[in-house]
Length: 330
Length: 308
Image (cartoon, rainbow over all chains, first blue to last red; front, side, top):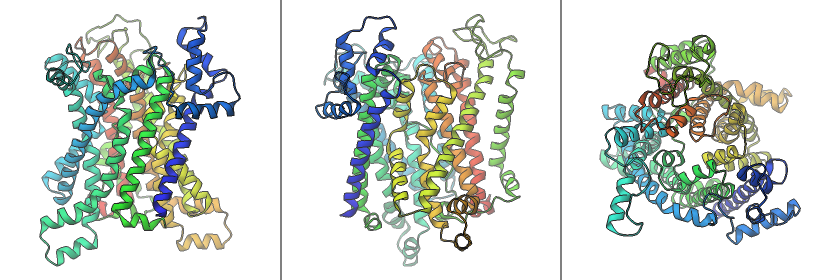
């Protein structure tokens, strides 16, 4: 029980730290953050538009020049009511509405490729560890190490260039063409066609971490006494690999998957940028180039909260699956 | 995992779980021979040497200044412009050569500073395991570990108007030290109850002397591996940031080159050289770091050495 309470305590403390960080970052620059931001956005000599400044203040938790502690308090209040301010890029829409529109794109693309990468990577890694030093192992290990050294966004650029521009097999940007967004067959086919290239890149770079991670832990597990004992008492090889070593080696990967699913909310910033894919990652890119601070802050906060929640869930799963974790901290 | 740079330094290539818990060997006078004896590490060292040479000699070997953009746009490769020019009239070869300075500088100092913070936090926290000092530092490490790095770096960078390379290094450093700090903490916990540490304590040595003069030297290879891991991450992060248009505003890096190639229509116009070369030099540099780290693994893990 103590283990679970400690994890929940850590979650709450980090959540507080993250929100506070989000509160501090815009205030690190000297002067009134709301007015500075406004001037950056509209140009130095622009008339100050009170409505927009007010929108900024709401985002910063600073309605009317209150003291820093009041601002801090108000900021929590605004977050509690779900007020994140208004996006500059998509004025006058709320940042939550803008993010809500981009989220399904990211969740579908990144979610599906992540789970597939996890499954493929784990199986390959486990098999490579089991047939250690075989030809299969060296091909898989060296291959992943090599692809791992290529910057993923550059790989994406090359694939887009080759398959999108040179050969013209796939659309070069966007998430859909002419069809109206909705749950009809035309649109889904159109969206799938547009998602093919980004998905391909994510499927190439995605499994690498899982392959190498699974292989490492599996090799360690194969050297443990319990595997030696199983061998000595004549348990069939297949059973040792699957029911003994792989099962134990899977633990870190499962918690890793929970964490990765959490950071999914942030999207694949660089990849979505390359393919101009209408997800959360591209939104972050737009927020940067338009200096859309309310959007940027909300995206950062959502991403952090997603990761923290996933981390909490991962710790809980770990505590249930592995009694050693519970014992260690009580 | 989301940054696309996977650290492969700690790859277990042989036998059971000796990777993390192995006896750390003194790097002594033989460390160079051990690295040199491994073909992988030797290749990595040579490549890294060439990169460093190119970066140092950039003013001599680069045909033009990297920031010059007054050439005719979109020239085909010719003796005057061996790799051609960009849409905005920059010489691609010169940008490539000068860009090596940015990547190596970010790698060197990003790796160095991240390693220093990791050492300070990890060593002190591990040495005082179980006390409130450890609780506090471990909490700090765990926070830094779970916070998603790329969105945080991007947000920090987006708030600054003029960005220098040192700001990039600073931001990468403060977001990337945590993993190494945790590794160092668990390493020092296995070391701090050794006899020689007790002896030093009884001899009246101060805490910092014990941590950094007695214990740290026996972790040299772990620290080196951490440095190259951090340097790899920093180089990749700089490229990613510059690709988003958040790089140093006064110089050209490989990430900036790719950013300009992407935004100025290199893909649509089929300018494959512009698209290809910055990425390949980046990939080769990261490969070199990875290969050197194989050599460092050999130092820390004798099991790997005998079969190499």
